[in-house]
Length: 153
Length: 134
Image 1 (cartoon, chains in turn cyan, blue):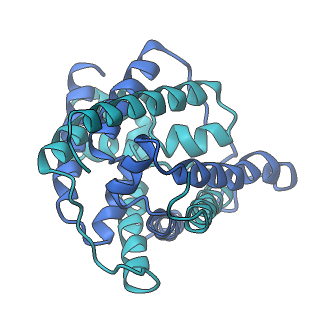
Image 2 (cartoon, helix red, strand yellow):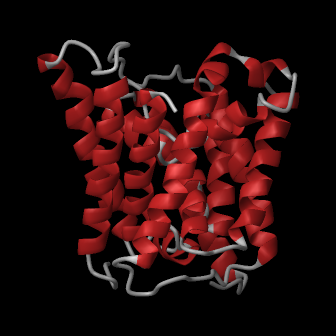
């Protein structure tokens, strides 16, 4: 069940929860991830969807938040990471095609593993619960199909 | 940089540190969960949700409003067909690549440059969604 142990997962989750809590208590904002794509597109596109009030109001802090996420992982990498810098062996076409579907799907669903998964469920939102169950079930089916087709890792 | 942006920047640093600490910056680890080989991702999500639950549901009973102003509002969304269709499409992309938005950003921080392809594709996917289905 847990070939890598449980400690890093639990600690990582607690740290993520503290980050979400810190932001919420100070600002009332939900520190979620996938809206970044839509809100940042409002800088470049006149398409009405991206220029909704909620995206225009949040687009600046979402960029600061995203920059922080990248920097935080960098801090981990150069301090306590046992591996240091690291590169995936997942094939480029999977990153590309998967990325497209992740961008499209999370925006259509109005949330991702962070928005529906952490903030949504912590807000006791049944909508988010259904979304999480859906993307986990479909993710498990997809990943196992890939495995059966001999696509590794 | 105003106070709100500073808080979000610091919150982002902590969030990204937690993602990397919990292995989420490695698509391989996310895939090993989806392949049902390592259930650690559920522990991480559960722990994160548990801590956030306290901030969202308990803290507002004792603190009237956020320190920097505004109001406390739980994150709610109305369930629609798009919620579930979108989640299913996300699931396909997640199972295909082991990437999600936050983990992809944190992956950049661990030096995984190929993930730039994934992030660019996420922007493209979000564009197509907003342009044609928004």
